[in-house]
Length: 274
Figure 1: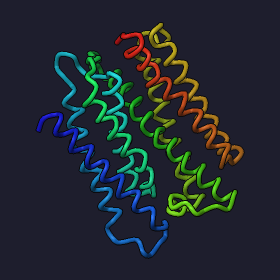
Figure 2: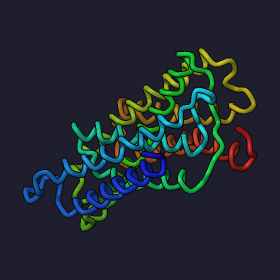
Figure 3: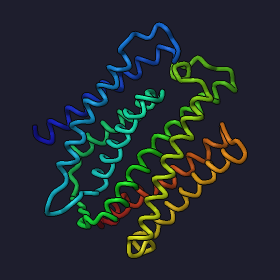
């Protein structure tokens, strides 16, 4: 199958998984009326979309140009890894509802790749330190992306409890608040560890992390690291939870998003530089 066919297949499967997830909101987390197999069917649709998505990204790796990290291709990789992590985590944790955001986001990015032709921006350095740096960066951003989605759901749930307005099907379908909070900090902990590896490998193996074209990315990544370090320390030392933890988490994610995607947007689409 060509790239267009694979993209369309993945987009359709992602949207089907999105619709299935939305329809599953009719059932409470502990509802005995939940039809058997519906959760497995939705996750199967996610895997069905992820396979051609992965094939598309692998197909963008060319011997002549190396890894393509243009903005849309980088977004495609991040969204694909986020879907993969969601599907893997769903085997052990109640994270299914995050698919309401992650599945359509992946579909939109694939649709943009189809409709907007973009020049390739290759990474030719295939040394293992560079591979470690790139891989840990992508994994960290993807996992912390899921953590940010989890924080938003937690904010909605916390607000519903405070205002005693739990009528929303989304809020009713979520696990208990404590389970949601524990899951949030597990996601942050994993993402923080990967972000630490990314920054550490960059400082050790890259020539100059504060070079002109990398300075803003490095500073924003360090700022994000500080945000997540503070929220984890606050959780351990002071038992932070609720709105405090949510605000620090979202602050860290915004810094990370500006570092990874904001810089590429400015360089590639505004300044027309690779």
